[in-house]
Length: 279
Image (tube, one colour):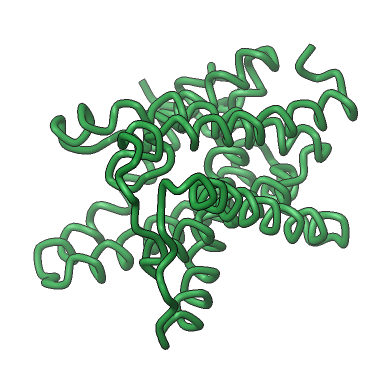
């Protein structure tokens, strides 16, 4: 069956999503495959291929907007707009996300569950590197999940279905890893779903702007990057790993999920105060 790009907008969401992803893969694989085969530095290969994937995603979005939906500024409709309000929400989100992570580890330190380590000379570099990486991750993931995916789902489904579908898909795609690793980190799945819900509520509470969810996502990644890469904490072993996080990942721990639940509650309450979209 030949799909008419002008009629594609009227097709069900699963077909539209499938066509978009298949087209993206057909564009990306021929370029990425030689890099995977010839590259020796796995980190450099991953960064390069993922950067290419995101770049081709942006190019395909431009075509998608003009030829499928006949919207030349599709990114604006996703909430990626350059305005003072969006910028302020971006900065606020970064601050909230960073404070969330530092508060979590700070409380665990006060309880004696971890010991803070001394800073070394590389700490300023780690802060700057972490900020850059966190912003790019936050921008890319929120544009994909709370921009493109959320918008496609909203064309076909009711707000509550869209909310849960977006969050579950977000969690599932973060869970694509070898089976042994999936089983070991299974407790992260509910936390990832909760994080996905939080980001949707953050966007809806901002009248569809992406600044706050991008900032929140970046702040969370930045905080964890500083703690983890900077090797700032060492767990005391006074409580089991399931309290603080398996392998040092706070999302695989009771405390991390509780803190994330508080953040989710705040974002949901903020949304409900500004709109009735999810009622």
